[in-house]
Length: 513
Ligand code: BGC
Image 1: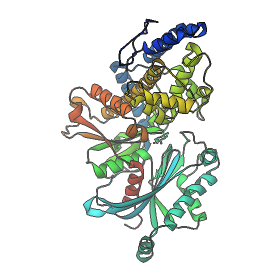
Image 2: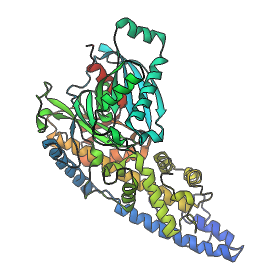
Image 3: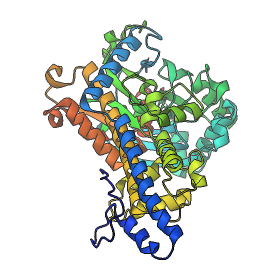
Image 4: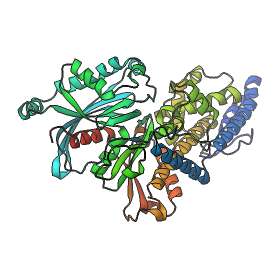
């Protein structure tokens, strides 16, 4: 939404559709009642102008024109090559081999579990795979919130908590399911979707490199994550075997292959955090020093959240978000585009406008100065508000920041700030995907001779629920790909990709095959 220029106090307006002048009119009515209010008329008009000017500057410094997106994509491709060349070849992109050489074929069969640890919620699920039918016959899940103290506590406490949740899930299963495992003599097998950077040592083991997304469980770093979890399962006196360790992007890619078609080449998450993985030619992974897989392919977990480049349009708000985070200096790309940070960026911009341009009146609302008060779902709600009076914006400002009354002009500015951030995030994410497509020769004339559409399996709350963000992303991808884009590439939502994909990979790597 573009914000027009405020023209100053121009008397009464009679249009039914509110305009930027309307708040001036409302205050002008009051003016007749006394001098004090009359001063506030002038001030409001002037402060809104100033806030608007700030928002225009902010739009300018966050802008992502097409040439810049190409530069971002090219910089990413360069880092991809460096990261594949040698361990630590890129200090940004880890380009981690996942040991996943074959993606699900649709023939996976049986009852499998998945545990999904990747954000503030933890999920356990059981999936019944139908074999040749390539179908999921049934699924059941349980979701719990990770207590915040466990996100920054010890590995033992965190893993005891998730093992306990898994244990209570299987303890409360139907008798028929319990009987199935007793009669078949099989141990329950689970995939482990663990959505943090891990250097895998096999398809079911890997060393935690570091944490992201507000987690900081220091004593778990440098150790095998599956062993830590498996030990906690043993402490809970249950027998459940982890058969596959899977990043959520890899789960999403696997689920996409299972559901869509074999041209699904990329898995991408835009949620609390962000990342992408893709199918690479094994011989292009120069740092791989083990025998080449028979399939000739290897799924690479890029950990693109740590991408950084001088082309990324960073603002003061990005710097503050980074400085105040538990991992300053890391995950720049993630901090600019993902759900964990979008609300905070918007809050910081509004707080600056409140301080410097007296947006929301002379006193800066106290809640506006509190960190992390505005969540990304709020930003999404604001962004989607197309009511003439921006009623949803008013409600969010009241509920979150306790700002009781706002003028339409102020609400338009808040809407504008959310639009600027949504547009920047969506477009930068598209540039990232375009970089991968370029790397694997799936753009324009170099499309590997394939006539089929390349599918990108997408998951993550921000992509799923923030419709405007998603449209910005789709539009930018189209711009980058040029006129054949619709023919060449499709973004498909793979709901609960990580969990289902982890269960599928547990099935394809089952000990009982
Ligand atoms: C993690 C990735 C993960 C992504 C999406 C990032 O913070 O480093 O491993 O895939 O979030 O959940």
